Image (cartoon, rainbow, N blue to C red; front, top):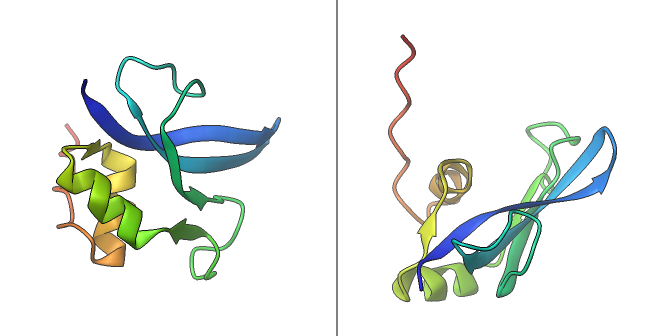
Length: 92
């Protein structure tokens, strides 16, 4: 079973809110997940403390179990110091 740490969308139309979850890679984006690891609210300003909330201990546990973070979640983990910052994508 391949595990991913990824975003699952919640919230209303044009008011996005995301849960950071660990899920089987075959599960749908907003479908079944194993555990919630935090949240991301893009409606808040970038410097707001509650924009990204992470449960550090559980994230470290799942990474040690082999879970791989998606690109957007890897950026959050890099800013929090839980993982190295991912390389930037090259624009053509």
